[in-house]
Amino acid sequence: MANRGIRVILLIVLLASFYGCAGIINMNPDLSQISVNSKIPLDTAIFLDPETVHYTYNTEPGTFGCGWMKHEIMLGSALEKASRDVFARTFKTSYITTSREEAQQYALMLEPHIEDFRLSYDMGFYYSSLKLKFTLSNNGKTIWESVFESPDESKFSGFVYCSDSAGKVASAALEKTMEKAVQELGSKSSFIISSAQQGKVEPQVETGRSRKTVTISAAVQKQSSSDIDHIPNFKAMLREDDLAVVIGIENYQDIPKSDYSVSDARLVKEYLKAIGFKERNIELITDERATKSGIEKAMEAWLPNRIKKDSTVFIYFSGHGAPEPSTGDAYIVPFDGDPNYLSVTGYPLRRMYDKLSKLGANEVITVLDSCFSGAGGRSVLAKGARPLVMTPHAPSLPDNMVVLSATQNSQISTSSPEKGHGVFTYYFLKAIKDGKNDLADIYAALKPQVEDEAKSMNVQQQPSMVPATSNAKGRFVMRK
Image (cartoon, rainbow, N blue to C red; front, side):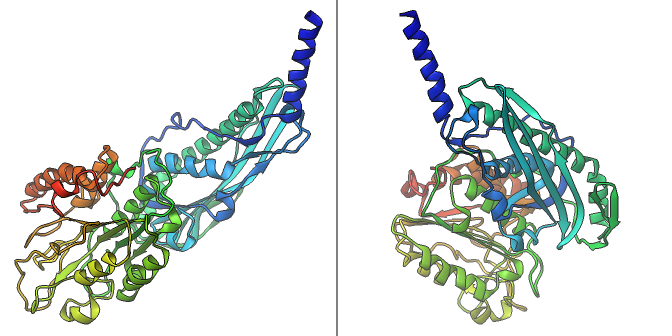
């Protein structure tokens, strides 16, 4: 019997060796130990090219510790998650994107790139090493570049549980390289900040011992940080068919700016991704891309071409609104809009609601951080006209639509330099972060908070929602 037991044990060991732990080897790096002394107060895009995002390390069949089957380590995916966590604590705000064009719209662009990764097995131990290159740039010009390599990480495995041990050494290598990068960025934070504020950057590009100087134009203002800039892991399910159009216009072509509208729009996009929207299903248009034709293309071509009957559609706009004095109709003011000629340069809310109602979507959620009275704030008015007392966003909506607006009637939408956000958008995202799921609960949470903060600025601002909360309760869910 004893011999039979020994044979069974040997057979199990051999099967474990032969088959290994086939499939995906999970990486779960512990990034909580990476400390950040102080944030760099600049909006930063973390650009991950598709090659990096989809980087997969394949183990070689025949490795004794992992059997004779291929295994995959999804290193690119782990790097994306690590970047989302770590750099949210490193910069004022950080946004993950796979679009270089979008990334270059930010004050800074940080590009992590996997240079090399190695995994080996010897005498019951796994060993791994990782080399990452980080490039920090502004307007396409490199400010700083450095390569970081982890020390050899090892983990005893024996002959079983190979995927667990391999995943742990790979995760440890990622932890160490990310920690080195954060420490290096922290040591250069004063240089980055002071140079950016002066509008001129004379960077040091580090490649081994050689250095070179590049002169860069950087019109970046010092910005505040707030609690909503660190986006939690909502552990949301993937929303395959849900779509979003996110518009933020801050620096207009011919009219005053709308403070924080671009950074607010970018942060809204990141929250949408965190609650399950796929990046390819989010159309973000800001500043010079948010022309009248750009908005029309997004609302009337991009959306209808992708809609499915079970889709939830989310629309967000931050920027100036304006009333047409002769009719009182409310308009979104595009980047190239002129409040003196709204009928030909503006995008009417009435038209937007009509187009959204005809999409055939399951639900449509519209969030407007703007105002339409012409009384100031995020509102403009034709020359010589007076502010109007109006209720522009109380249209007759179909049952599957809801509109959440920053203001009512002749009020103005405010922004907070202390928070670095529009007041309405700040409390909208804070409600989501604090666990509010549907629009009715979000509205109930943000309304008194917006009102109180506006009063502290000697302003009246009361958010509104159509339909009323009693008819929206349990519907129009943001976090599923």
